[in-house]
Length: 420
Length: 219
Image (cartoon, rainbow over all chains, first blue to last red; front, side, top):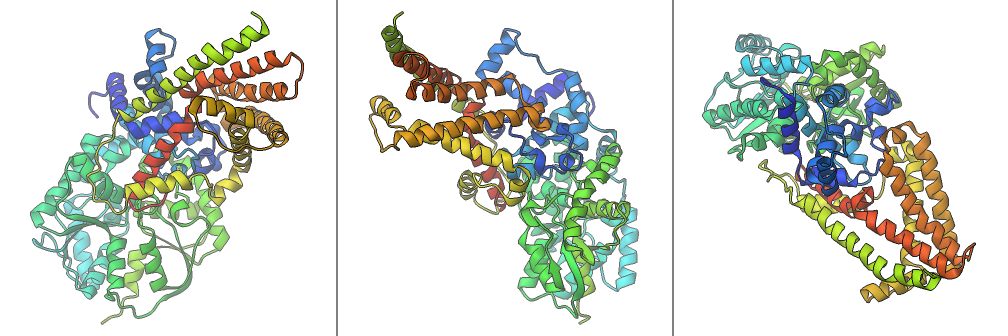
C-alpha cells in the first residue's frame, strides 16, 4: 500500500480487465435489477447503492482503453477521462456498501458477475490510495503481526491451554505428517475460542489426525478484502509454507467465509501455482465424517433452528448441502428462511465491511433485511458457520431487540457428541 | 431524388453499407472481448465450467422468484418487447423475404394482422419502458444519453414499419424507404451500443456460469 498514486491505481484497474469483465460491461443494459438484489439498496432505497454503479471506475477504464469508440473518443478528447477525484468519490461505494456477497451476480439478466468486478475495482482503489483506514490497519496488522486483529501466538497458546484443561483433550500443534492442518480466524481465537475445543473433541471422537501450526494459524486475508493481491499472496504463502512443512494432506478453512474464499478459491491463483494439498471447509470435513458414520451424537437439538448461509461459503463457495446435512443430523426442527441457500441475503458485514468502522451505521441498517428473513420463520436459535457473520449478526440482533441466540454449527455438533 | 430513387438507394448501397458496418462491428466487439483472455484457474475445480456456462446461458432467461417480486415490471415489460421484436423482425412474411434474399434461407411467417397487433403491443411496451426509465430513481441514475438514443433507434423501425404497413401519411414507397432507413440506423448502432448485449450476453452468461460452475455453484 505504500507509494499509492492515481497512476498506480489507473494501471492496476487496467490490468484487472479481462475477457469476463469486457463481456459483462458490454452487456449491461442499465435495467437496474441488480439494485433490488443488494441489501444496501433494498434497505436504504438510495440509487447510488446499485451494484453496477459501484464499478463505474472500472467501466470508464474499460471503455477508454479497450473499446474502439472509447479509444477514438479519448484520442479526440471527446470523453471525460477517469480522475483521482472519481476514485475518491467511489471509495465508500466500493468498500462500505459492498460485502462482495455476489447476490447481484445471481440476478443480472444478462449474466454479469458484478461482485467479480467490484473485487477487481478494489485493486485499483487500494493502489490509488483510496481504501478505508480500518481495512488499511487490519491489512498492516495481518502483514506485520500475522493477524488482522493483532492476535499473536501467545494468545493462541493461552486459548489452547484453556481448551485442553476445560475439555480434557489434546490440541496438537506442529505435528508433522498429520492429515489435516486446521486454520483459524482471529475472531475464533479472541471471541469464540470454543471453536478450538469443539474441533478437538469432534476430531478425537472421529479419530481424525490433525494439527495446528504455530507459524500459520490465521486463515483470513485482509489483502483480498482491501484489494492488494501482493499482500493477499503473501498471506496465502504463509499457509502454503506451513502446510508443506508439516506435510499435511489437507488444510481446513475455519468457520469464516472470506478465509475459505481466500485459501480455497483465490489462494492458488494469488501465489501462482497449484497447491500440493487439498483445501476444505470445516463443514465439508464434518459432513464427510457424518457420511462415514463417525459423528456419534448423544442427543439432538430440540429447539427450532434456522441457518444463515455465509455468502463466501455458500453462494460464492459451493458449500451449500453440507451444512444442511449436518443440521438435519443434529437438529430435530431445522427450518429454512425464505431465500436460504444460494440466494441467501448477506449478513451485511462481509468483504471487509466489518473492519471498516466508517460503515458501522450502514451495516446495522442493512440488518433489517436479515430481520425480515428471520421474522418469516421465527426461530428459537440462529445457526451459522462464519465468525464474521456471527459477530455482526449478534450485534444486529441486539440492535433490533431480537432475542435469538446465535450458534456455531461446529460447536453445536461438538456439544451433542456422545461421551463415548 | 424521386421516391423510386430513394427506395433504390436505401435498399441497395445504404443497406449494404449498414450490413457491412453491423457485421464488422460485431466481429470487432467479439475480438475486443476475447483477446483480453482470462487467466487459467489454478484452484482445484469442484464442478464443471462447461456445464455451468451452458446452464447459466439457458437458466438466466428465467428470473428467480424474489427478483420477480421485486422487479416484476422490468421483467414483464422486458419479456413483452423482446418477444415482440422477435415476432416482428423474424416472423413477418415480407421480412422473411429480405432474409431469403440476403441469406438464402427461409422459414414460415405469421399472418400479417397478428404481426401488426404485435407491433402495437411492442411499441406500447417500449413506451412503458421509457416512462419507467425516466421515473424509476435507479434507472434514471444509470441512464446515459446512449440509453435514450438506443431506445429511439429501437422504436423507430417499429413505428415506421407500422406506418408503412397501414399506409399512414406519405406514399407507400417513401414510407417503406423511411422504414428501411430506420432499420439501417439500428443496424449501424447495434454493435457499438448496449444493443450489443444481444450477442455479448452469451459471453457474459457463459463466464458467470463457468466461474460459478467451477466452484460447484449453480448461478
